[in-house]
Image 1 (tube, rainbow over the protein chains, first blue to last red):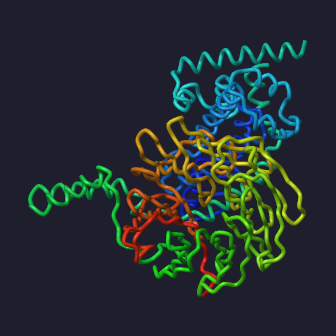
Image 2 (image 1 turned 180 degrees about the vertical axis):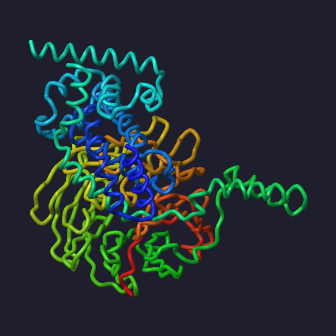
Image 3 (image 1 turned 180 degrees about the horizontal axis):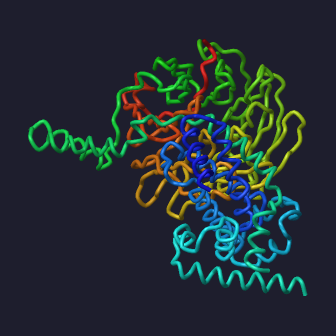
Length: 179
Length: 397
């Protein structure tokens, strides 16, 4: 873990100095979880790609002012998860007010999830985006409830209750699917 | 399922499309990284520099009368006074500007020298800036941008509006409007065909170096057509109050309406900005490295905000915080990005100024004063504020 942290700091330093290979190392290290986290919250491949990509572009734009002493992952994950929640909310809002243009546009046919467990993905989709986000931050990105509270600017008690309710709902969904 | 099983399931199994999306995203990230400009040390540590400078200024002010003047100037700049500047003595970036005033279209060289091309009402650049296509009542004229010599012209029975030259190569096209018809003529003047009827009074837009064209029809739809194949590629649903059409360098169609900016990728709407009821969007320009800069006029405050949206790809970035570049009284528009992508030019009629903003981070604003008189030098009372009609690379050298 300490080695990974040293590598990451070196990559950030290299990327700040103009090394594309260091930036690529940083990207390869963080893309899978960033994309997966976004996907699990938004359940839309194109949107997840855009969210994760925008987070990396934000990182590139902020590279010169980035404090190398801070870990890169939490900074990136915070952007990804908050934008994913915003995206779901914005989409719900647009559906509520009606959107002829989006309705008329040909829908992008996302391939069905083949690799990530369909049961888990489907059960997650039944939760609210806020519940999905805390589950993803806790079990995919491995943050503590205290860290999640900081990232989402929520009281720690709220995070704990969302985790508990989210897990209960998830287990309920999975049990229903199995029966 | 236990917590451990859930963790294992999420960690070990990639999401659909994860790998392919990563490859595509890396290409985008790499290109933006390659295009970025490193921020100099002094800018990276600007807060510290400002604090030190302010401390020094206060110390000087406390002990000397001239220091009081320094403090006063600092106070003025913080209070948001308009920037003032000299006449247009040079452009901050390479290239040539086309500016249309009451006298006609002017070509402005980088060193600030200008040439009036003639008594035309509207004009736009040819793809490489070697020629200008101009309209004068019922006549369409192409002229050499260096000399102003007419190359060819054609006449119609109705006034000609919004001539626009397609980009790239030698086989170019010019689109223009007469009445409610959209015409397209080859860059050498022949042949001329009517591409569409019942079009809206709005300038058409060419997509990059292709012969793909977007135009708005009277019913509010925007059509994207391949002129060579005479086929319609896609059409939007009805859109209220379309004000401007443009294509981004990566081929997205940008549609500006009174209160929205919509982006379309191959017919699919992927992003919009929306402003409130008391606002009016005046103009939009595609920013280098993705995203757009738009002019948001606040009707109540009678002021325009120039805002940069850093979105570059989709509706996913709808809620990324925007950056305010500038706020000025009255209306600001004619947003034009320099050929090297490092400067944004805007016209500000209320202040009689052109404003040049350094991109991508707006740290520097260069103002040019007295613009009306600059482009109508002999007039006792200049008629109107000049319109910025394009900024192209200098291919004449």
